[in-house]
Image (cartoon, rainbow, N blue to C red; front, top):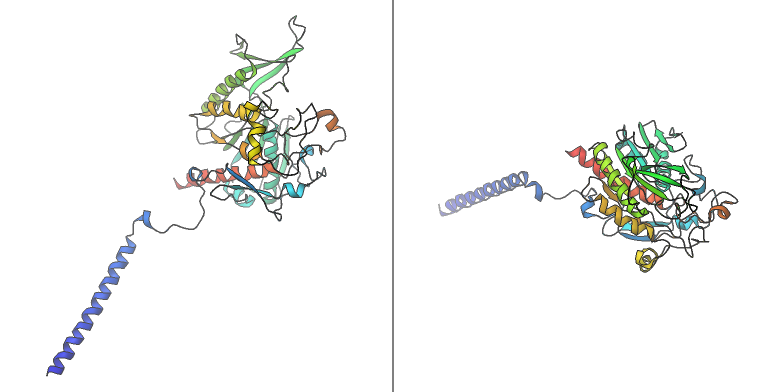
Length: 404
């Protein structure tokens, strides 16, 4: 009898234990189903978030096996920037440098994925020839995703491409001051004047005034024409507002500030609020030993060091390449409080004194006439990194829009 009683007790204990274990596991299962969303393990998928990843600050690293995304046969090339065709030296090394942002990574653009995302949308560039330099890089990268890409040009100042497979247009509108300006021949007795360039600070240039509703993404810039090398004293800029000369006359950088204020106001009013708007900050020049017309050159074999940048570009040093930071200050101030995002490509580009066309311009007498080109960039080259960054920002924007 005692044995039978012990067996019964033991069996009951076993059953009780099994019931408790089952209940506990069920309870845990219930908790896992109700686990707070914010505490769930995070996906390993990479989502770029600009507030936590500054793509504009970083360093250039050399990867000898890195190759460009296109070659000299791209139909969108502009001859003076086609450094492969023009046999520019060290193009392999120039394109082996990769921009590595601090504390995050930057993927190279996937043209197919990008154009799929941009299906039935359009991208516009408005500004000077550095935005055209940017555009050509973009087109040459994207063309691999659509063999039917069509080149087009209008009135000598619009150029771009249409990608029929995705119904996407990517184009450039030349407007070097953004505001309307035109030549007026000499109308006074001032012997020093050959004439003036009239700038209507409150009137957008004709080449972009009617395109504000067409694009889903627009990249603006101005800057390289705002200096005495473009408008010397004998052919100055004269600023007008509401059809009348501004009195007293404005110096050139004061005029820039007024133009920026008016053009940004126009953009804020006329460009739809759901259009993604960027302002590309200045692309630095790398003239060494003098200006472009004073035998300035850029025959460098490698990027500048971090410690050299202020010596080259800080306006306090009054060097020939000071304009980028000088103008960026005015542009940054003008854009504060607006819906226009900064595309601040200046710093990463300051390093790349080695990546300009220099003397390899594709024409026999080009250097003798124009000097070395230490302002525009070789293609393929630095603007390809600009494209990687811009595409990342565009992806981020439209990804966020799709989640709303």
